[in-house]
Image (cartoon, rainbow, N blue to C red; front, top):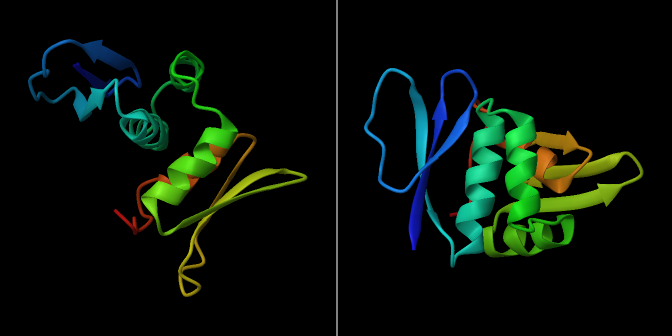
Length: 125
């Protein structure tokens, strides 16, 4: 079953059963397939990177059981990324040594979102 989420310009991440119409208030639309965990990860990472309300993203993360361990599997499947835990939290980087961009955060999701913020180059899929 498919669901849609869209990011409103005010930072709200809103669920719709049908695809929402584009408007000046819609930053981005995601299609969520509840049988595909990757779509949940992509939605949460990209929405947080684009300024969605962090509390809402963390609520969905908990609801969908997007754990730090699960993030490791997401990164393996996506390809082109490295995700490591250190004493200060999580670090996400591209696996291309020439690309020195990285994202840091207390959770794997937040590190991936930092890396995905506008201005970074998405590699892999």
